[in-house]
Image 1 (cartoon, one colour):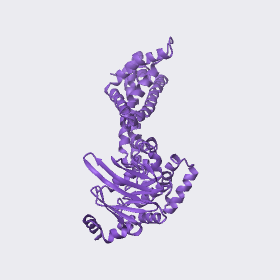
Image 2 (tube, rainbow over the protein chains, first blue to last red):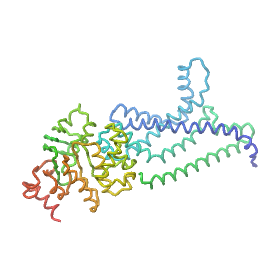
Image 3 (tube, chains in turn yellow, orange):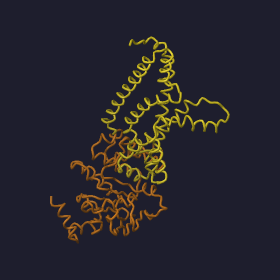
Image 4 (cartoon, one colour):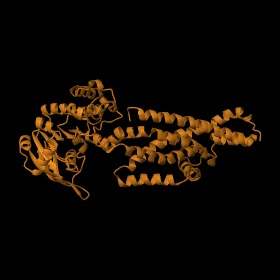
Length: 228
Length: 242
């Protein structure tokens, strides 16, 4: 079967629009996910049973549901419901908002577990030292434990972001035009679907390989650096 | 200054402390020794509330440690503590280690805190190391920074939990020298250590603990020359023969 790559150069501007959506989902999902994940991790390790239980429940629920279904629920029920309550009677373009919300909340559960492991890897002695200096538990967590935990966790947090970058292709189920769906649509219309999907795959492959390489470098640097 | 009255503590079934009582007066240096697992570390961690206890009372400068209403962070800010494993914050430079709690707990300005840090680093002989990270220092240097960090809070008393046990032999003296200087300056000190040379030099009293009990609590002279109990005699003969 001969390949026809000729439609690719002309499609690049449109593909780039899709890539912007993909990057938006990845960045927002990772940043909001890390922030929420940090809060969840701290709550889960807090001395309050209720807070700890709530955080654990959140993490368990989101980790037990396939991402596709989370996306569907937000697309079909939660986001339209919220939009209907907040902006009644208006027709809004909710695709991107849905994706950003769903990914942020979903990723938070994974980040929470990574960060919790990071917090627990900081020794009890460090916590005691902070308390002994008169800091309260919140200060010790914020100023002593979390900076160390996050530093150790950076490679894992980035690796999770790379997985998120790949998983963002799932937004095709809610009809959002990310990079992959743009490529698919062009290929479908022009009749070069095989070429377009191969090309899109190659783009994901190159970006992920390069970023993984950077993460490995960073990991090595963090390990040999004096700041353990 | 520190008053420990009838403290008992259990870890589950195991009784770690059994009716321990003692007093540390202002300016007094008290050394706590005893075999490992005798409850020495647990006892001094009770003094600043890092460990809880089920029975008894501890008063620090007239404030009850066990009272639920006591502002423990505030009390801890007034009692310095030095740990066996230094516990410097590895993500902060030496000077930031010493200024962190000054700024966040005492509300000092950055400049005041740095001035204080430099002054204390001079005292422990490490001013040149102020921009380094803890991992770039030797164990002895790290422990001296840890002492400076505790002193920066202008504590009314200092607790030392086996401050030289994790050090290579050649570094022990540089830390003990700082502690001797501190003792001679009139600091109130409660020191868990096996360094009997330090005890002989600057301690006013020696407490000997075994199996969670305070077995002896006496002026150092009489403790070393004439221990009352067999347990203390055996312990001393074991650590002093070499």
